[in-house]
Length: 403
Image 1 (cartoon, one colour):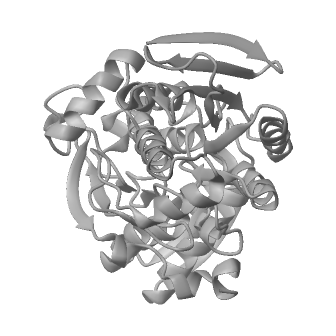
Image 2 (cartoon, one colour):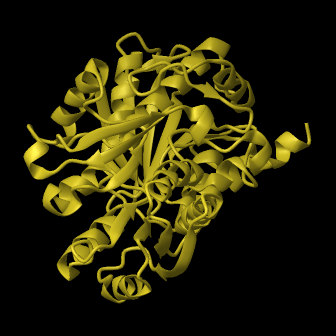
Image 3 (cartoon, one colour):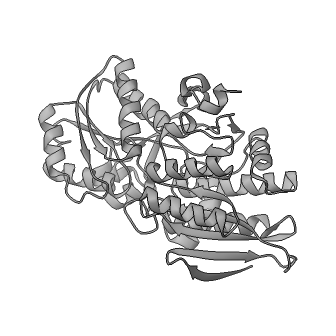
């Protein structure tokens, strides 16, 4: 299978997967991956998400409905206006059938609003705000991997129950960080804990010293990092330099990826509690797919990159099943069909677009416990999706309420 790449609109690439039996006269079915391709969230998404989407298209055979499958790639640069501009161009000019990825909740929420307005299909894999299945839900919108509510309930709830009942938040100052702080605060309070304060840091902050000093002076047992990507790595590294953990406070990474642990190193990250939807070393299927991904990307996949493969595959199966790329028909088929792949077993999609899947609570290993490259996690608990995700009633999905 060949991928032909050409640049359009400066930051957008089109990669067309051409199967050997594709009808050259058929218009391609276009799927777009929109992510942070070079900024603070790119290690967990970025080119790895593109590779995962290509693997999904290759495994599907490169064509659907007798037409080639095209992959459109765009960089939202963590800006909602750029994300909307790309999405509008793709929908209006390039006949894109679905947009997947959308790391950065501000970008995801903005594209969701446009997709809902135009009755287009979007699958948020990387963005985390639980509002995506609440006030921003859509009949043709999906939330695939995790959300801030699930992270808060799993990691936050476990920490409070273990005795870490006072919290101080260092929060990324955009929609995702705000939602994660809000949802974790609710979990802490529900478990009889207290929140002693919070500070907000701009996305891409290079120096967390002032924020860490405020957290340290609060005397909170837990410093909750309501951020992601490079921001999380930087904060944990600098906390280590300040001796915060050695002095007795704990760090809770509310959204941490395996690429973050790789960047931080086990010496500084050991003992960190975190929640993931996927780990490359869970079982033979995850190891087999991750080895394929590693060969292409030279890093083990994050849950977001693995989630892209799952989302694209489920979408293409649904297009084939209904015999059309019509967003409403495909969305209905996606909801009616269980998800079964190396990433997700027997997962269902709720009417508000929330994928109900198991999550995993991990603890980062000590250096001496790691026996091979990328061997970073100890499984603490498998948390059923029915327990960790917000209920449909709590979410208050607007269109669901009107049914």
